[in-house]
Picture 1 (cartoon, helix red, strand yellow):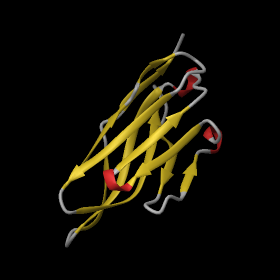
Picture 2 (cartoon, rainbow, N blue to C red):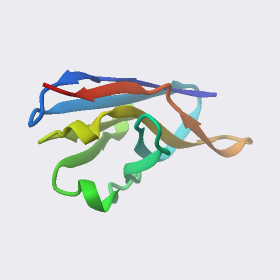
Picture 3 (cartoon, one colour):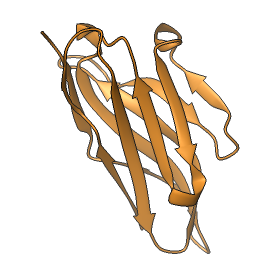
Picture 4 (cartoon, rainbow, N blue to C red):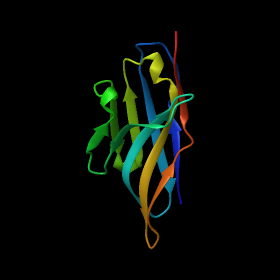
Length: 120
């Protein structure tokens, strides 16, 4: 099985920046597409950004230019750099990853999430 652990959330003032990390751990697996999603109070979870193992990225249209997703395949880690943060970015940010285990095939897993609060 594969576990995802997010870190880097916290409280930041409007206009500030945060960098989230999500590290995958387990045994005998390969990681495919990784991504970040967020869920604000009272709202459905929404896509933030995804990145394939080859580095192809996709963003929510509303976040392009402020958020940047990247990954380190050697560390099985995905990052989310968030700049010019706004109060409406406040949410629980969760990491998602597709992974392959020999003889088990492809599966998807989620991290537990990290809280990001943008407030003065």
